[in-house]
Image (cartoon, rainbow, N blue to C red; front, side, top):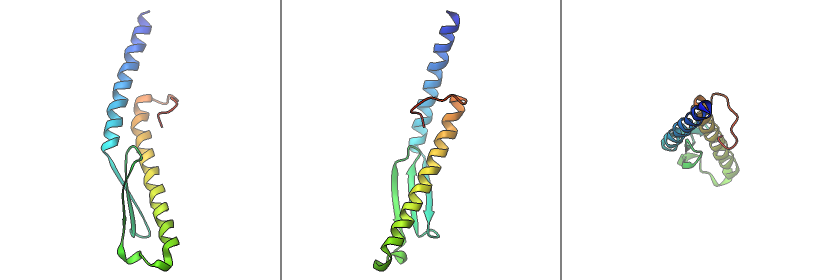
Amino acid sequence: MKNLGKILREAQKMQQEMAKIQQELAQERIESSAGGGAVRVVVSGTQEILEVKISPEVVNPKEIEMLEDMILAALREALAKSRERAEAKLGRITAGLSIPGIF
């Protein structure tokens, strides 16, 4: 039973470390852009969209579709960067364990 106690302590420690990292990720801001910086998106480390900025010179009513595509590209890139950062940080704790729902 000594091993079970040790495993439980290790699991509790891992849970505390993961909670700390998740709090840190919530405070992080990851930025991405598209269209040479014409569209800029900021997301949190928990994949929450925080900001979308559009340069006034790219707003042309005749080119709305292109603007929408740039926004979508910037959002996708920012969220991918945020997921990579979360996986890297949480992966240090889980050491390769496959735990459903973490990423």
